[in-house]
Length: 176
Image (cartoon, rainbow, N blue to C red; front, side):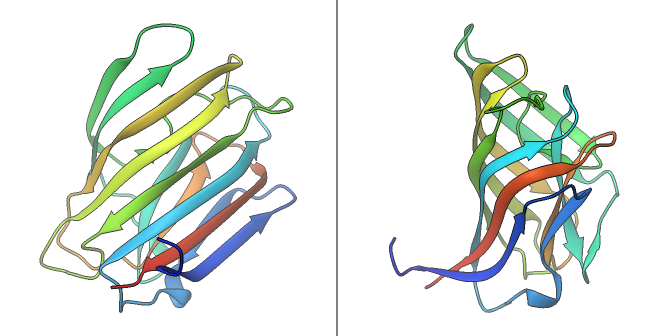
């Protein structure tokens, strides 16, 4: 895949911010598939979820059009499944994060049909974290934004208040 990913936008967090947006005015609609990469993401408040919404015309969509299904991979117990319909966000990882040293999130999401206003926008989710309590946790799964609209980016935020303290968020287009 080397050479196939074209960087469109990047946000590097080094001090507290409430949300991170990728795309918007930097969105390049010439791609069919996009990838969002997250590296060393840390939050400032324990026991919080990291969530994501799509943006349309640069504004986060807060409607209840977010459905998802995940396989939760855990180091401390057996794997399990989770699914959600009609939420106003996607879970970036389906477990709460901590705010102590080395409790970080990493992973990638692929985005499909974002530019086609006659189709739903689909995502794959491949996320792993050392989370709260301090266990290795991962999610693989699928997500769908159930609105026929053009998506021009994503917004990450700490659900129910909190900030990102560290991390790199990068949006790529996948070259045809």
